Length: 375
Ligand code: SF4
Ligand code: SF4
Image (cartoon, rainbow, N blue to C red):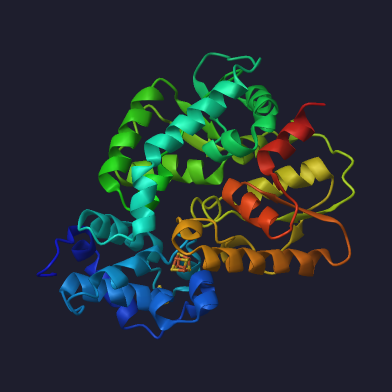
């Protein structure tokens, strides 16, 4: 245990950080950050070894913040775990490491700023949701809430009405209630502000406590609400089902019809939906139903899919690395598409923005569902 800092969560992860410390770096090729930065300190092995040393008080005095900062050299993509023969949960360990570092005052300034500015973010989301306004869609028995996700509301608001009507049509409760002035709190979790995240999550759980079926349009929201809330003990027991809209649509592909789509359609597995929640086939079933053919697969797909670099606050803490990682994914798309005009379909809003910046056309899986349904 560190004699200079209290790091209780990292102390509890001693087994995980020790496993990596004595491992021959089997997962090295899996990590997008380590691959681009090409430094031992930011491959999963190096980061976890650094956390182990930090927790043991083995880091030289004055170097602790620099070592702690490597906990943010991670998109939480989970790709290292899919190559790890020991199934070591590196991303989850680093979520705890960030929380300890934040509480100890060792977080990078960029991460602290995300926490400080979170109220401004909420105000922006509420303003954007107000601009979207009410959507004319059946509410059914009132048990289903549809959460498009804050990135969709902030940057892709033109599609909120159609995706809401799509969820209403698919919902077994006969409709849904749009919840657009919403953030799951993932930025606080990624920043390491565990106290702030838990307080926010408890408010969300109270606000949405009346619903028994939550449908999200964004893979990140689905993962945070379903996996992280449960892991950190804030999910209300009434939430019988939390799912991404692709899961709901895949149970209803008979309602989807094929559209006239001439572009090459490329499937991207969002890290949070795929590795995070084990949902791989539902998006493919939906895209096949709407485009009339199976989507093209990237060189890395399913549990080995390539991260876009947009997760885990990497674009904030290491923007150059995040941009380079997105370019890698864009190159994979070009490799598959060849000379054809192509579109990537993904359930990750942050990935869509990253791909757009890298010159790739990327569309929301929710919008594809609406397109196949509302005809
Ligand atoms: S995650 Fe697994 S493979 Fe990678 S360094 Fe740790 S123990 Fe080794
Ligand atoms: S979760 Fe992804 S980004 Fe993080 S250490 Fe593992 S491979 Fe690297």
